[in-house]
Structures are given as C-alpha cells and as structure tokens.
Length: 444
Image (cartoon, rainbow, N blue to C red; front, side):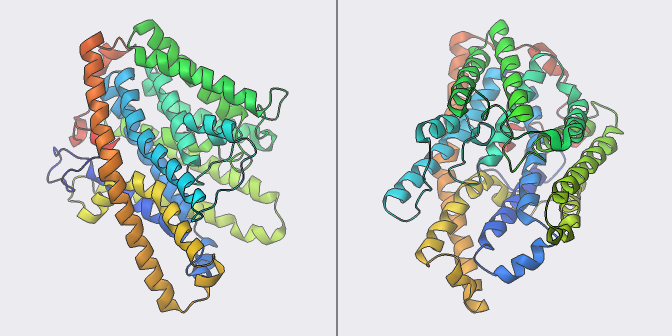
C-alpha cells in the first residue's frame, strides 16, 4: 500500500480506496482494544459487554484480505510474482519489529516473557506460523499473520489446480467442518502427539521451504507441486493444530477470508449473485453456533456475553457493506492514509503502548488518573503510534515493496516468464468489470 492519492474520483480510478478506508477503521479498532486495557478501563468493561472492538478489527482485516489477495494473484497470473510480493510486503517490517522487541528487552523498556524453546520459537516465526505450530507469539498481535499465511498457501494451491473460483464452496466447507467437529476438535493435536512440538516445527519448515522454492522456481511442474504442498500444509495445520484459544473459530477465520473472496467474485460477475447471501449468512450462522458452544463450557457469569459475538459480526458486516456501497465515492483522506500505514500501525501500536505503560508503572496507575489526564495520554499515545507507523512505512515498508518489484522483474528477465499453472487462463479474469480499478497491487 504505497503512497497514492487517497481518494477515487471516478469508478475507473487507480485505487480501491474504500478498502484502504476499511483497513484504517480496522486499525483504529485494534488500537482502541489495546489502549483501553490501561486507559478508560471502566468504559472498556461497559463496551466489551456488547462489542469486541479488537475482534471486529481483525475480522475486518481478514475480510479485506480475502477480497483482495486472490485478485492480486490472478492479476499477476504468477505464483512467483505473487510470493515475491507477499514476502517483501510482510517480512521486512515483521523482522524489524521483532528486532526492536529484542532491543527493548535488553535495555529494560519492554521485557520479553521467558521462552521455553527460544530457537524453536524463532524457527516458527520465520514461517509466520507460530500459533499454528504450538509456539507463543512473541509480539502478541501476530497470531493473525498465521491465518494470513495459511490463507495465502490455500489460495495459491487452489489457483494452481484451477479451482480459484471455488471460494464459496471452500468457505462453506470450512464452516461446515467447524460445525461438525464442534467440541471434538482437539487443540495442538500434532504438537502434543508423540512427534512433539520441535519435530512438528522442523517438519513444517521443511515442507514450507519446499513449497516456497517450488512456487518461486517459475517452472510449471515445480510450481504446481509447491503450491499443492503448501496448500496441504496449511489445511493440515488448520485442521489438526489450532491453539487452545482458537479451537472454536480457527476454521471460521479462513472461512471468513474466503467469504471476502466470494464477495469479490460476485462483484466481478464471475459467480452467481446468490452466493453473496448464502456464504456470509452461512458462515455467520456457524460462527454464532460455535460461540454459543464455547460459552456453554464457561461459568454462568459468562452467559450474559452471548449476544456480543453476534453484534460484533453484525458491525463488521455493516462496515464492509457500507464500504462496498460507497466504493465509487470519494474517501476521506485520513481513512485512506490510515489504510496506507495500517500494517505498520498493527505491528507497532502494541509495542509503543506497552513501552509507555511500562514507564508509567503498569496498567494500575493511569487507569485511576482523572479523566482529562487519561484523555491527554490517549491522544499522545495515538499520536506516537501514528508517527512511529508513518516512519516504519517510509523507511521499511515502502522501500521493501519497491525492492520486491525490482527482484520480480530481474527474475523474469533472467529466467523468462513464470510457468505457473493456470497462467494462461488469467487473461479471462475481468478485473475491470463492475467499475473496479485494475491496479490492485497497491492494496495488497
């Protein structure tokens, strides 16, 4: 998401600014979630009785990714180009933030929790799959990247075998599997088996490396094998190695992402419009049932929170629907800018908040301060988060994305066109249908 004009003057403009706006809103919801842990705590308790702001934010991020990522792959028609773009989009800032964590730990500004297996944890993070490999997320917010990575692997696999328009079926199958398995789904089944966590992580690394090497090779047989292998890795981890926190919604998150893909395909008139009703309603219904099942195992006090997941999903649906309805209108520059730096905001905000919290003596101090003091702190912290995010975007994200494009061009020049399976068919993908801009790479 590099710097571009933040508004779309016409349906044929060069940005899907409404998606940037949704990312901006999602980023603000996640920032509020963590900021309210030690500021305005009383109000947080009242709000979260009915609405989970952070959960809404990440669900909105997932929907947007589901909408745009398959379109990006099909626009390129190249698994190699797609993965180079993804790697240079996600990893540079991810590595910088992890390095900052280590530095802050060493100087005592943000101590890291002890890691029982630091080397294995580091290896799991190289794949961005720690939570699906039974390892802790060092930063705390990067659990979402595991689902993003699994989604990329699934999308690449479907693309390679010619099933890219099967997203409605995939979404419903994932939701149905979650419903059927229900409470029978055991968390971390692989990691807690005789194999052990370390072996599972090393095997996953081997499969991940082979899959990525095949897709980056640009040679048709290797690309096909790599894409299928990566898809099987993602499916296997999602089905057998969800962590305890996400055993009830771990299959529904990729179902939500494929719901976003379904909405894209309906918008592009690639599939029947009735899928736009069936898939979102089906996934939402299963999500509600799964949440009620999960809450049924909690003490009576928690039963009062039963409506809040339904309300949260409803808010996400309304926001996304509003974005689509307003997609041909001018988008406020501030929302488009927030979307532009949303990845930096997502990775940097908790770091900034926790460092300040540590300096102020923990959560207990600020939460008892007068309201105006908490308000000033909140404004200052949001300002710090935005400043840090803009800095990392300019110094890390944007240069890395430019470098990724150079690498992709040089590989094409040296080794020739990518022999990705299904490449020839991508010319039929009507990216300009229904008034949508063709330049999708800027929103990946």
